[in-house]
Amino acid sequence: MLLGAASDDVALAFIELGAIAIGLAVLARLSDRLGVSPIPAYLLAGVVFGEGGLAAPSLSADFLELAAEIGVVLLLLTLGLEYSAGELADGVKSGWRAGVLDLALNATPGVLAAVALGWSAEAAVLLAGVTYISSSGVIAKVLADLGRLGNRETPSVLSVLVLEDLAMAAYLPVVGVMLAGRPFSEGVVSIVLALSVAGIVLLAALRFGPQLTKVLHARTDEAVLLGLIGTTLLVAGIAQQLDVSAAVGAFLVGIALSGPLQERMTTLVEPLRDLFAAVFFVLFGFSIDPATLPDVILPALGLAVVTALTKVATGWYAAGRVGAGPKGRMRAGSVLVARGEFSIVIAGLALAAGVEPDLVPLAGAYVLILAVTGPILTRFADRLVPTPAPVPAPGPLGS
Figure 1 (cartoon, rainbow, N blue to C red):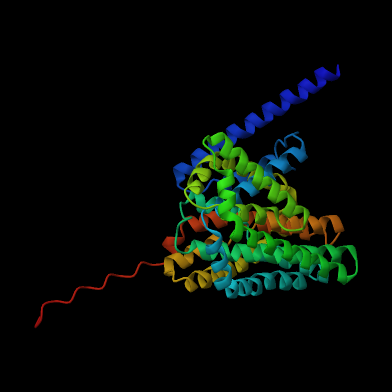
Figure 2: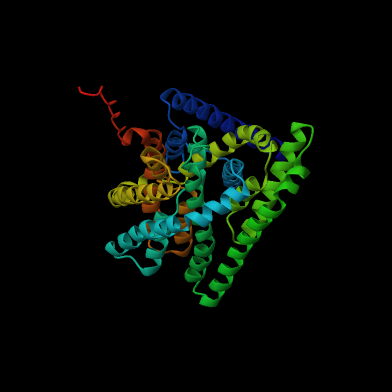
């Protein structure tokens, strides 16, 4: 009897997974024909069919969350494979000013919005985090979909993302201490530990990257892929355990690898990345209950407009410092607009702590707006900057 019940559960899970995969395939084809990233379609499908939607799946939440986390890890791994550790270090060293500007421009609107809504200081700190942090997962997918990983402005985008993730390594322990009412000294210890671990991993990538590449090199693709995935998940898990983002750990594994093996690894991991990343975006949509959106849509929309402009300003400044032209600067700014996984994590902390009940639906609506419009804006960023008129050639002398 139990075996029969278990078999029925497995059959239902297979049917639901198959239906989800087919639906995503259709959305991916439609997006490809329209020439846009499939991310907005995945997100909206998750909202329509997820919690409070038309037909929420009965699949295990733990299974979907794990698959989604793997998707983010693989997105950041492939992003890291595009660059060397030296390029990253140079980008962070030269891009710290853009990182400071990013924090000032994008955290401040969250604080001001919370004050305007009459929320508590704790809610203001949380909403500042929601509006500050861009979505590394969405951005990595958009850059890959649009073929912009090798663009001149992309390293400046990466340096902003890395600085944001390092800021989160300090922010999340502080928020945890604040919400739990523990002594401030515990927060200081957590910050020092998290930043130290991130620094050690970065130094290890700089120092031992070539050796890691040699270890993972193998004659068969199967051995290379298994070694790469195993190493990435191991480092990501250790980083997460030490209060550093798993995404940062995966990104640093990618940049630690160098030489001709990089291209081979990228080719091998791309199908897995696309599969798990699609699950991540759909699950994110599942987490948003459509019934909660109408009451918060206006403040979320206003906040989205303001912080979209401040992110564009951040990217414009960061790309300008590496010599990108107006179109490249607009591409860098527009791709930073998308918010995603970290913002939802912060909203989840608010939910668990019982801080301001409207913060969670507001954050959900805000992130949904920017996660959908960000990739679309990026797709057409070049058209937002007018092409300068050609300078006419000088006429013949005496004319």
